[in-house]
Amino acid sequence: MSLPAWLPEVPAAQPYPLVFATVSGAHLYGFPSRDSDVDLRGAHVLPLPEVVGLRTGPETIDRTWTHDGVEVDLVTHDLAKFCRLLLNRNGYVLEQLLSPLVVTTSPVHEELTALAPQCLTRHHGHHYLGFARTQWRLFGKTGELKPLLYTFRVLATGIHLMRSGELEADLTRLFAYGPPYLGELVEAKREAEHGAAPELATAEADVERMTAALVEAQAGAPLPEAATAHAALHDLVVRHRLAAG
Image 1 (cartoon, rainbow, N blue to C red):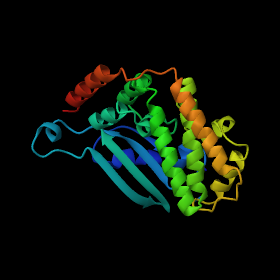
Image 2 (cartoon, one colour):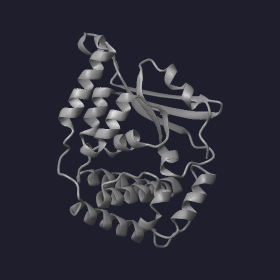
Image 3 (cartoon, rainbow, N blue to C red):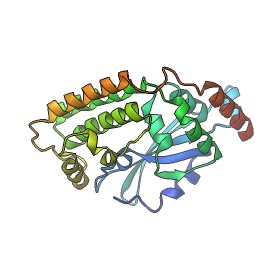
Image 4 (tube, rainbow, N blue to C red):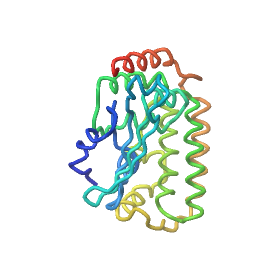
């Protein structure tokens, strides 16, 4: 599904300058529905007085609104918080930072992207294992297709990341890691955001197999135990905080 043409207008309407804003969610994962909302994620820069003074600005801004019938969900973190999350084995922010669906960018965004490989660790596997467990439980409660696809998506992303050291969030590029019916599930999801999942006799076994593959890939991952970008990210935050004034 194509993204709205008016998305580039969103950054200028925000209360603080955006370092970047990208599209996340189902559009990034390769299976947006006709009625999918648009998930925008990014980072903003608080001015110096709102960091060092008594009245501090918001570390996180979370807004939801509707534009031309499309629901938009925007979440941005202040640059310092975003960098702390990057260093905290957080797969969400890595996916947001590296999303190819860029709404607005900046030189700071380019610096962050260049430092992303130094934030990757084998412990990011825990993020994807935990996310998969949560979505699988949700599927068990609702029977909806969406959490089932999310389960397969995060397992495939995690396996690929642990094996190759490359982050790929689009499930349609990762079919080789999953069962042969993934393409059919993606097509079904594109028709309805909250449709029921079809009967799949092997779904549980397929999830167990992919989970085991992720655990094995994590154990042998060609990734370091800890991020190495601490000093560089600290310098980046200080430089651009002072530049923002």
